[in-house]
Length: 259
View 1 (cartoon, helix red, strand yellow):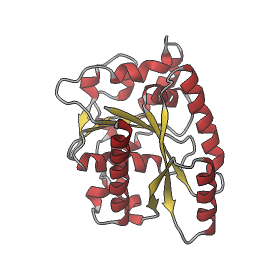
View 2 (cartoon, rainbow, N blue to C red; view 1 turned 135 degrees about the vertical axis):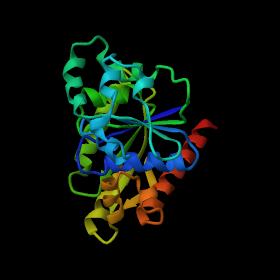
View 3 (cartoon, one colour; view 1 turned 90 degrees about the vertical axis):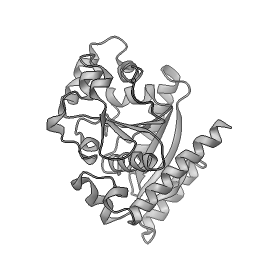
């Protein structure tokens, strides 16, 4: 089982869109996938067609020990895809976690609970757009971090903050944490700025950038309002093709690492 945290403390970079669509495309490729919605906004939950108001048990209850993992994990309408859903209750978890012993390991402990009916190939964690206690929990339990960035002026600034945090987490809590890859989102090759940012990212993170880039695509933007990942909403859209390629790249990287 591979745990990938999808993180960037900068908002608006296509983080939740990418985690939902990557999870769905990995599932479409035959992998059993659990999507963990660690963002109190719960956008990954609604993006998978789950009504946040009707959740019986959420990630919040599991993290504070009020409910077992098995009561919160929910099968989505999509093949091979499950979700650990969230709503605004999770916003209070950061405050409550501060008082808890080993607070940075609450998510790790939650995900270590046994599930009798399914074993997952991948767990993908949608982190909130901040470097607070919830994101720290994700980095402590993850094997790797996937970092989506938009090709815009401030992209590298946020990237350096996140990589510093990853280094600290490695040193203090999770020595094997690695960068899965940097994913370029909202790509438009016609813009000079896009090419400049891409050149800068390649300079600092050579060998860590996914070959797949996610294009600007209206269908990707529309899919969440229908509660569907892009490969279900419009399977032939440019965005759907790109996320399938990304899923194939993630699987291929995993096989290469295993050799």
